Length: 162
Image (cartoon, rainbow, N blue to C red; front, top):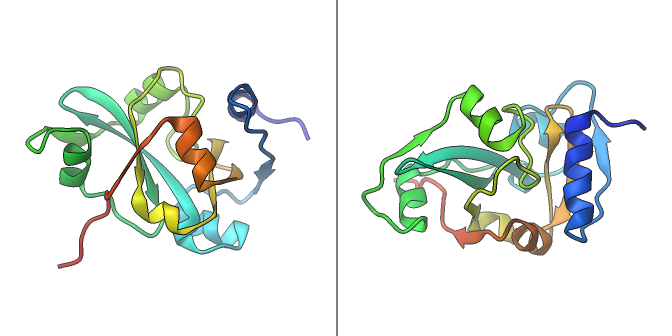
């Protein structure tokens, strides 16, 4: 299968980090965590949502379990500043920072190096699935490899139920 250029960039980044991956295409798309879980046939918690935010003006990546909502205050704490200004970035800024469109942002292989935080809940799973550069392409990896290849800080990132 010939991959789109953006998916090939993810494969190349994985190989460079000694993590060969197999990219799978789902023509109906895997744009949301629910879509991806249904397509792949796994629990929604095993889907890695790659969310790009600004924390005190710095672009950061939060890798969040598909079953969770990101708590912006938790992301601020994880980045070392309880009172940090945190906000989701718009689609153009995400593409500029990562080189990928929203819905297809992978956990690595970005245009720029981004501080990365991994949702501790992802570690409950041995295997997780993430976007591979497009809203139709995904790959699986172990959570250990995900943390290693991204250089991520593991943190509690989910919104706590009240």
